[in-house]
Length: 245
Image (cartoon, rainbow, N blue to C red):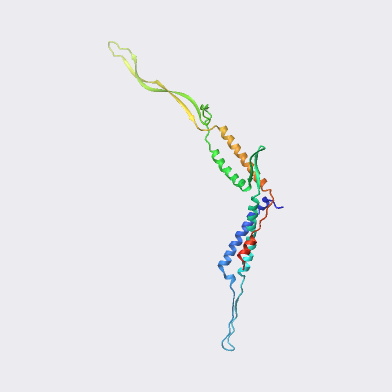
C-alpha cells in the first residue's frame, strides 16, 4: 500500500505538471490559430490561363483533442489532492515527550501547522528580558512574578564653604584666611529596585521545552504520515459531468 508520506512527496511534480499544462492550454486556446484550417484553390477564368498554387493550411488540433490532452494531467492533480485530503481525515498521531502523551490523536494537518506555530511562539519566548544576575534578587513576598534587590544606601552630599586660617592676626597684620569648599554628607537615599523580568534559568527552561515540543511534533507528523493512502478519485466524474451531452 502507498503510504501518505510517499504520496506527499509527489505533490511538487504533479502541481508543476498541472501548472504547465494549464498555461500551455490557455495559450493554445487564446491563440486559436491551431484550430483553424483553410483550403484555397484558384481556377483561371480563361482556358489556358495561368495556374496558381493552392493555399492550404491544415487544422493542427481540435478543442476536444486539446481538452482530452489536458484532462489527463488535471485529473491526476484532482485525484492526488482528493486522496491526500481523504487520507488526512484518518492520519493522526499522539504528541509524546519523555514517554508522556501531551496530546492524543492530533490530525496530520494540525501537526503540520503546529510545527510552524511553535517556531513562531519560540520567537517571543526567546525575546524574554532577564534579570541582571550581577545583583542579588529575591522574590517579593506574596508574588511569584516580581523580584527585588536592596535597599541600596546612597549618601547625599552638598558643597559647603569654610574659612581656614593660615596665619593668626598680629598687631601689625590681619589674619590670613583662605576659603575652602568641603563635600558634606547631609542625608541618605534608600533605593529598592524591583523587576518583573524573569531569571535566565527560567527562560532557558522555557526554550528547552519548546524545542522538545517542536521535535516531538515533527516525529508525530512523520508517524501520522505512515498511514496507508485512502484513495479518492474524483477527476473523471467531474469531467464526465462537464462534457455530458
